[in-house]
Image (cartoon, rainbow, N blue to C red; front, top):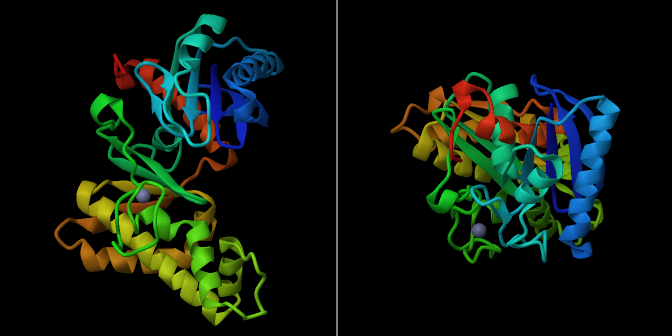
Length: 315
Ligand SMILES: [Zn+2]
């Protein structure tokens, strides 16, 4: 049984995940990053003990998926906007010492990619890109069955490629990144800008509400959906041109309304990917549901230390 730890900006979830990718017990706690790393570690440790006790199992390894920048080789946190003050701390070493088992960490986009590739919508595919579209855009790339990492084991940032050079400023330093144009908040911001003074709509309308309005035939909402489909399509088309994966697995809150976007997305892809066999890239919806992050975190351990067919040796 693998202990899974999902460290997000708002909560830390912990669970026991069996060898078939099923979560058999889980607990969660607010991340409370300002409360300090030692406090966070103490909560992770006690939740791991409690979930193992609840499931009546021993822990044979621990996998961690974390928001922000992490160093998979050393096990340390990098500079993460959501975990101020945690940089340089090493949950891999600390949990390994506490539980006397092997521990592995990856960025949460990579963790989810591993989960979907093994136990979810990407099962059986060796070239896969996982993309989550919600308040941000994240993801991970699996090539030939292994997680792709860059120099110094870096996690590539698939959301920070520019799709409109004069677009909105992005936190990374560029303008018009995929992330600045195609997230749920970006969709809502555009809608608000274009419906200023129209009192039919709530002041702080969300992407989810816009999707519902579009489904009921609202014209301005339909235009926002059309624009979202276009930008989603551009970003996905770029990934297809660069990697021609067998499947792109789509997750995140915006993809709960995927039916509204997919036709428009496919149209964009067919317009701009004609030098690659884009029709071979399946667009699939993430299938691991609400426990996807925990399942992915468990898969981080399997990917590093697990069964011989998937063993990657040193990171
Ligand atoms: Zn950016």
